[in-house]
Length: 304
Image (cartoon, rainbow, N blue to C red; front, side, top):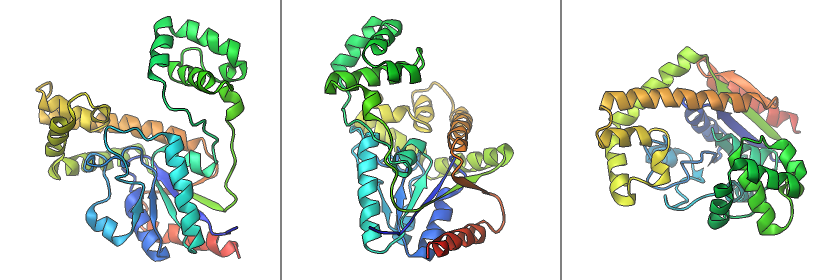
């Protein structure tokens, strides 16, 4: 059993997590395990703010570019791969950094969520959906009242998932969930800043993506995978797609990307603020790197 810790750097999009993590990882002679649900997909580079080849040269990154854009990586898949990597690096005496803004990915690792490994059942879902949400929720109340108590009657996504797990395994999802927290120490650090500063960061980042060739990237992906690829309906890609089909001008697409990124960042902040174990730092403070580094050194030192 190792007492090597895990360092988590999380927070909303555009708060500067990646840049800070690169500096910290170099000082620790460490690696970065990405916790970003879109960077796992190959070819989706500029719009996901994936680490550049030069950044990957500086520090080894893991769990990026591991999936074909037509594949689906489940949270359970991600969790298993991340846990295996953390164990491997601990064995080598390395302190890995888990870095990103996908809250569920981070939670799956730091809380050790028990996730039922049931693949989506397309036909079953279609049959259930055709019955309507109120009927489907009534089914859930019959077969798994404990899950129904936690799921809102108007939440079709979680209702369908709970029934899918029950019909696939014969065991209620409420009996398959829970947490087995890791035995190693974890330090969770969050980056945040006030809304006006965050908006400025989002505007600058969107502008940089366009300069770096986001339009060409989206055009190529549309040609290769077709306009209806689900990943092309995600933040930054959807708006440029609208521009490519003539629905909006490029400047409108840019404005929409900024607006939708702001809304997304707000949801991320709400998610992360619900976890009291995260220690927050102002992304705009001048001596951010030294302040965070001091905290990490204190944490490692306290482990003896």
